[in-house]
Length: 154
Image (cartoon, rainbow, N blue to C red; front, side, top):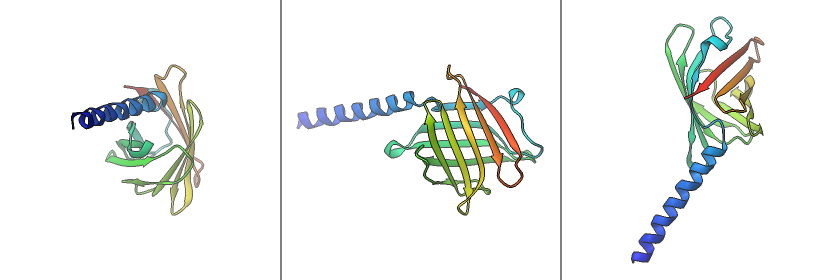
């Protein structure tokens, strides 16, 4: 009986250690705050002021976004998925119902935001070599408006 308890505890510790190592290997993991001084937004754009990447279930990543819309109203959305190029649902975003992230290299991810299966926004996320900042460049499919948002790691 004690052997089972010890094995269960050891298994839980190993699982926690594996999750921690996976999070450390992904430079996007953690909390990112918008650096408005270094960012460029088109008029009327929503600003994602805080983005949090955390470990989700089954080797997935949870992305939680908080910000403000063009009228200063708070916005919040969440996405849980893998960086495998497949669509995963997003909740809380009136302009999107799915996102896909594709890992390009250790510090770069391509992204696509979709509504009804159609890409509405595409972009790239690049984490700096030192891991202290990340730049998200997106382009709206319809208007071709480009946003460059720079974030500092917290």
